[in-house]
Amino acid sequence: MESAPSTTQQSGGAGGAGWGAFLKSIASFNGDLSTLTAPPFILSSTSLTEFSSYWCEHPSIFAAPAQEPDAAKRALLVLKWFLTTLKQQYASRSEQYGNEKKPLNPFLGELFLGRWEDDAGTTELISEQVSHHPPATAYNITNLPSGVRLEGYNAQKASFSKTINIKQIGHAVLTVSAPSAAEPDTYLITLPSLHIEGLIFGSPFIELEGSSYITSSTGFTAKIDYSGKGWLSGKKNSFTAVLYPTGKEKDILFNVSGQWTKSFEIHSGPAKHNSKDNLVESWNPLPLSELIVAPLEKQHPLESRRAWAKVAAAIAKGDLDTVSTEKGKIENAQREMRAKEKAEGRTWSRRYFTAQHDGADWVLTKLGAAVGLPENGDADKTGGLWRFDLAKADAARRETPPSEEEARKLASELLGQ
Ligand code: HC3
Image 1 (tube, rainbow, N blue to C red):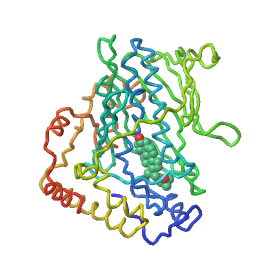
Image 2 (spheres, helix red, strand yellow):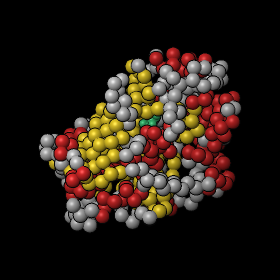
Image 3 (cartoon, rainbow, N blue to C red):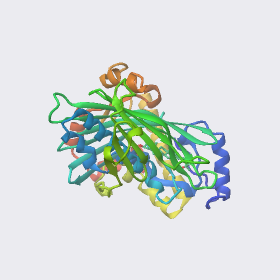
Image 4 (spheres, protein in one colour):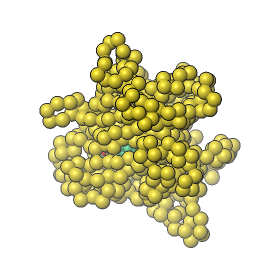
């Protein structure tokens, strides 16, 4: 459970006593990000369950592969969509250079639901905190007209060496039904590692590092290599990517390079031939599609913004005593609920997702080895191998929303409110 911010820490900007104490504390922390006691001015009122929406802030790019008859070009469109999500995922909270904050640590069963309505039609988002120890968030995003669907789950493993380094655990699976294809394509997507830069100056921001992959049931793999600004050369948020037939890394069909926060270029063939003659596309960020979220009073009591409303209001006012009290209420109620479940020999029933048994997931069994993912989906580090459960989602859709009285009862029992 997240520790409440210490009210003895002084707030202030970079270099303030609060920041110094924070730097000292992270040098010895145990790798569990939720136990980091961040200074008040670096607390965000957004919960990690909301971050799942970053996967689809351009629904038309998300849905585009479904229109492409050629399998290699479809794989390229999937790579392009993935690259366009990076800016939102890793830099949108830090648009003004260096103010990445510490998100709220979701409670078990926390939900974040929303939808986009735009040229691509309706696209639905379901995000649920499926595990608390270890913390893991699962999500499902479906573009209704095209049927393009993304599901996945993630957790983070942090370590400290010069700065905070984060390895993402989990993966995403994209399903695309193209008109020409006999069966839907499946794309298995791994998640990049990251580290925090600017910590020492009190202006934290994310840099991606290492490599991540997308491999498809149609026989193509994309490898994305991330790099940042070095001492002598390089630009921040840089990457190069190649798309090749799986197992034939040297037979490059397309290469992509640029900055994931700014622009990038797609060329056919290997990078050594890049010129305007083999330029396929120059990408520049597009305006985002707005995510529609129900007003607080219409939300389920476990929906993130409703559940954390009092904490968020207190963070906005800088009222740390209230932040601490309100967080404490949720944490205590959750602890009591877990104790009650244990005593009654039951576990919390996830509303939209179900954990799969080891070896039972055909996507990981078939495609995992190509991108270094184990068949069990790292279930031991994410509380399970989580898959979207259509039957549960249908049941949730059919359920009558709780009356005001029922909602109050749920909020009291589960959130101490
Ligand atoms: C590391 C992180 C929490 C995890 C965030 C993740 C990996 C969550 C899944 C999303 O799809 C992508 C994503 C983006 C940002 C990641 C966050 C950045 C900072 C936060 C730490 C817990 C906070 C560290 C404290 C401080 C002061 C350096 O910001």
